[in-house]
Image 1: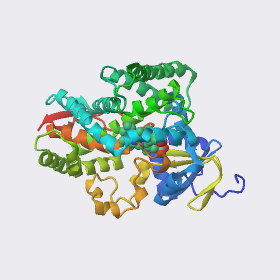
Image 2: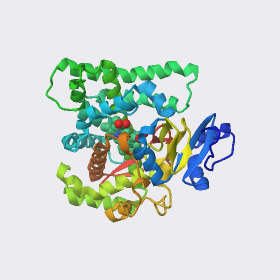
Image 3: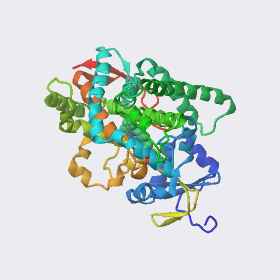
Image 4: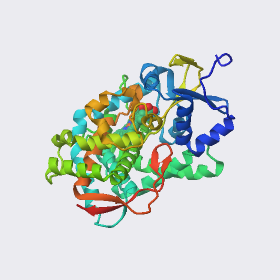
Length: 436
Ligand code: HEM
């Protein structure tokens, strides 16, 4: 296939120039590709064929219809070296089995039981802030999301180590950004990995020691899981699953919340409406599960922030076999990139795409767009297992904090996207809590 194939349009620069452009400013590079070459564009990096897929129908084809023809791409495979063969990384029959085992912990009825913890932890964050004393909202949201995942899914208290874990994770993400690991960084990389291991293995050990704790969280399900032959998950398998959920479950949500606070701070009218919604629905109380559907505007704000700054800004796949996408033949080994960021900013689907506008999320507005023009949680067999968890956590954290504080960006604070594996804010987010 490779010899005869006619590639879709794309830049004719050298593979080195493409790699350079992709590394220097990936979002700019992909945005230009979509603008200049359309829904399916092609470029070379080294020997490899890369495609950017930017049409809802084709996105659906890759994620849903033809998902069996793809594995995750090599950038994700590299992270697998650190995080192990957990749900985000495993493939094929093993992935399907592990997904089935973990699924009950993410069922809507289970998630409902996590609401109290989400409220409690959000309260802890809001109560430790002081009027007019600047905080790094990015670090605060990381703490919040990490403590929530550890408590709800693993019954573990990580408060004391949260900052250290965060530093180790920062180190890992920073190094993965380089695509290849220079020799002298290996030691630091391993040190960071070991730091993450210490916490996750401690959590597993403590629970094993407790025996049947009566808890029915994710860790309990994984510990109790039996294969058809009656065997249990090995310590390595458990470590891998726990590590993955622990990291996937907080890094993304923390990013999403950080960007949401920033966007709210830049849009006084939306901020006003958010405060009004929270005050009217909650009347000064802490939110309860029944309040969540009534906090619809808060959810719309969160949905719009996930459009403008999608935490997983790129989803990548590698073709196992020759295949066709949008009727175009693609050779085996092709890398397909789907950028939530680029598609979410496509003016064909979102008029005036740079504008932050929660009204895009009324049921009518949503129904007027193609479904796969928005896919912050991906779709199909690899869809985010934590999606309902994330929606609830987002709405609760925003409501609880907005009840007490207005957050203002510290004047002069630089705000820039840092597209690593997730879409972080490069300089954190220094904000001033002002009592309401
Ligand atoms: C706003 C927050 C979140 C966003 C934007 C997000 C986004 C995503 C996306 C896009 C994927 C699929 C990637 C792909 O198709 O290659 C994914 C997978 C996954 N997410 Fe999330 N996620 C979020 C929150 C969470 C939470 C709260 C948890 C757990 C508590 C979680 C756990 C996972 C896991 C385990 C997978 C792998 C699922 C599989 O492949 O079977 N995520 N997430």
